[in-house]
Length: 342
Image (cartoon, rainbow, N blue to C red):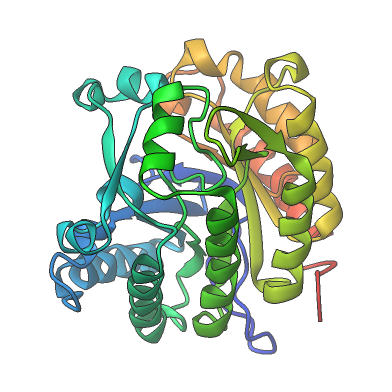
């Protein structure tokens, strides 16, 4: 376990390394996990325009407890459907459906109403929010990563558009969405984070980019743009870049060739790199040992795990060994070893 700290001769705080837990680790697991994911819906962070006090209180408490426990934090401000009501009224909305999301949250059967993230008004509000967060937390030793979530729709995965559903394609086109506007917003997000976060890594959960055709009748995975985005992210953020994927499985055939190409691009970028399994149950994750070994073999410096680890026949000693091997991967990459950019 590597404690959360800032090296005196390095202004950039360490990215996550090892095993990462959703929320605080349960009793008895504190020495296994060294980082945790903290999700904060934007509507709770800023319920009224410019009023961050409610969200600051929650984040303050979480960071304070994490620091006491020697944990670092990955902060995910959940935008999309969890954008504030005042912002939705200001920039408009689009309804997005996801069958997997309904299985996870039956209340979402009618789709989720997302703010139009590609509009200038949304970008301005997102920029103000990130500026406020950075002013308060950029120097906090327990905050390791802030996710770049402006362009998320259903999930905190900004390249996912749920375009297999024809209703989503129609809804997006009718709302004024286009791939060109979306890609512009993705690029703006990089510069927003680079402008405000100087000591804290900015992360993004990548997938092969889903590009909607100009007519809205079809879509395709755009690996050329995916590669270009990674290169641009390295150029803009340098050693402050953290890349992740939230769909990892151990069997290559379950993801498709584009995902494995993307993993190669991520590893080659030199950015700190982590994975999260696809799904939250033993049925969707499969054998946990096999999955962790695969993540280590693909060069991940950290692996995010839901509470399923408490139900699996893997000892704490084995988890501790996996944690050390992931940390070794992280030391061989960025930001403690080779680093992207200047």
